[in-house]
Length: 103
Image 1 (cartoon, rainbow, N blue to C red):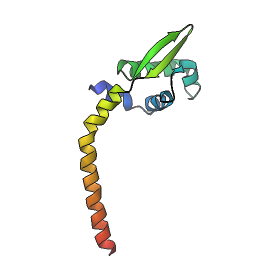
Image 2 (image 1 turned 90 degrees about the vertical axis):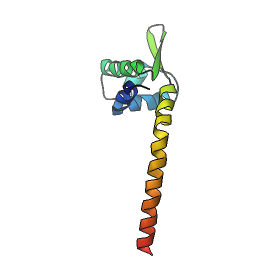
Image 3 (image 1 turned 180 degrees about the horizontal axis):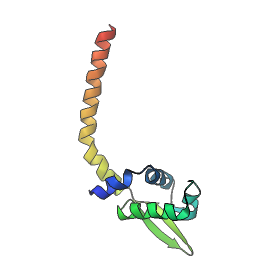
Image 4 (image 1 turned 135 degrees about the vertical axis):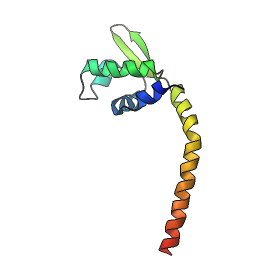
């Protein structure tokens, strides 16, 4: 897993683009219509996602369709899993303290 994936996910527009692509492949024009950004701006964000391996591009005639590539997200999830366990334990401890104080 590279820092490119984290850099790509750091931007809220790119995360929203990935959310849109969960529904299935989308043309750039369709994706651009969902944002108050110009089509070139959306294309730049898609290029960053492509560079991180999070989307793939499929030319269809005059249009370009983008598909979600979930594998890098699965790698991020695997990397985050131990931290999830850590935070669950911390939240359980906090809950126990709060339960004691409310008793």
